[in-house]
Structures are given as structure tokens and as C-alpha cells.
Image (cartoon, rainbow, N blue to C red; front, side):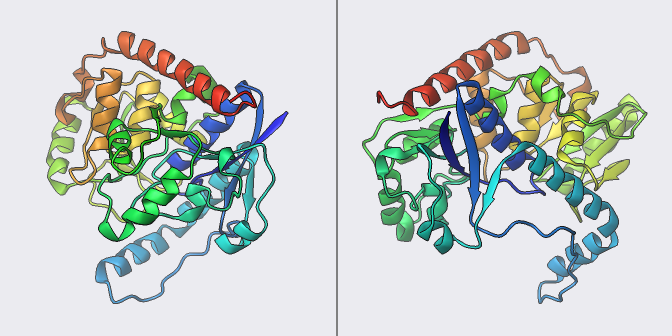
Length: 357
């Protein structure tokens, strides 16, 4: 079996990074490849260690204090999330990037994975596979830039990194257009790896969360306090509790806030919700995979990730207050589009990871 090394995010406190890592691993397995992820920092410690180190930033101090007060719940999430990663995703940890560059793992192919790994503002060399000497083995799959504006001071290094790839695949159409300004290479646009795993397969990873009453799930990385009025109205109108997955101090109003949700419970909570409200790309994506009633909240600073996704899949968004009566008839077409895009993705991966290329 041929070996593939993937460079991407996979962090205990980021559900999306875990799910896209697992999704790509499962996809590569399905076409006969063994894969491992490389991360250029040490493995997380065995136990969660809360910090109360004082900062000059008052808001940061408040967040640290809040996280400290919830430390037992967050410690449980930390333990269970790392177990989920260790059980399902193979990771090679390196102390730093220099160690990775000096002693890179051997593989037949190397893939810069999905998520926002190609942020032009950072241009992290590991995510551009700069540690791989043989440029013919450098491949990307559904890499996302997050923000397509390339700073002047990063344009040359971003250009050099992108042009060092044998095959380029990005997640958003506007990313392909941005790369076209610095490269004449062909660029494929492919769906996020989470969609390469079926709903039924994802359900096998689900772990029930101890919640009995019907609920509307809220998972927001971006949030404006003005939306809280709509949440209260929705709760009053439907009688359903608003249950929010939280990572710490937030501006969100909810009947119940959850701080100990591990990746398996994240899947279960979406699958079993009456409806979902989310500003997270992967919160939205799993809602679509499970064909849920959905209200996506768009971050005005980074709108393209979700707007591109909806345009490509023919999704109709809903207002927060109307989410429980949302029209879901579009899923008949959307599911067919996802099936086609999955087939295209597997075809791309099979082609670029081939000696015949």
C-alpha cells in the first residue's frame, strides 16, 4: 500500500480540523492509500493545563478567567477529544518546523490538506510542503486561503510556494481565482474532505450527549450580540431550548451552554438537533451532510467560505427566527451535487497519486 503524508491542522479544540483530517484519511483509504498527518509542534500534554497568566489585554484576561472557571469541563473535552484523534487519525508530531525539514518522513506522495492552511498572511512553510525536496510529489487537496487578499510583503513567497506544487486543488472558487493571479498552473476546485465521508459513516463516530429535551443547536465561531434577540424570539416561538457549544467566554445567549463536547458528541448533537444555527464552516457542512434545517450566520470579514459553499451546492439559507420552518426540499438536488463532487474528488486524488501521472 502506498504511503501519503498530509500536512494540515488537527487540533483538539477545533472540531472542523479534526473532521477534515479524518475525512481525507478515509477518502485516501478508500482508494488504497495509507496516510499520516505531520504536525510541526510537540504532541499535546496528557492533561489539560489551564493558564491564568496575566495580560495587558483585559478581554484576554476575562476569557482566561472564564476558561479557568470551566476548567473541569474543558479538561474533559481535552481528554476525550485527544482520545478521538489518537483512535482515528494517525499523527506524526515534530518539535518544530526545523526538525521536520531536517528529518522529513518518507512517503510516495505528500498532500497539503484542507482547512485554512494557505492563509497568505502567514505562509507557513509546512502547509506548503517546503520540507519535501521532490517537488513532483507535492500535491494539495481542497486547501483554503481563508482570506484571498495577498499582502504585498507576502506575495513573492506565496507565489513561490504555490508554484512549487505539481498539482493544486483548492476548496473555494475565489481561491482558484486568487491563485491564478500568481500562477499559470491548472487549479482544481474540490469539496471539503468532510463531504468525502457519507452520513451513515459519520454516524458510526457519533457519541450521544446526555441531553433529553428537543433542542436547537447553536455552534458559532463568529457571533454578534445583535443576534441574541432573534435567539430569544426563536426559543419563545418554538419552545425548544437553544443549546450552544462553547469553547469559553462568548457573547452568545442560550438556554444551555456546553463546554465538554468532544468530536463524537459534536457529530451526534448536529444529527439529533431539531435545527442548527452556525457560523462555522464545518458546523454548516455537517448540518448539510445530515440534511438539517439550517440558519448559517455569515461572518462579514470572511464571507466567501460559506457563500461559495452554498452557491456550489444549491443551498437555500434560512433566517434564524425561521429556521425550524425552513424549506429543506433543496436537499434532493444538493445531495446529488455532493455525490458528484465526491466522485470528482476521489478521481482527482487517484489521478495525482499515480505513477502514471
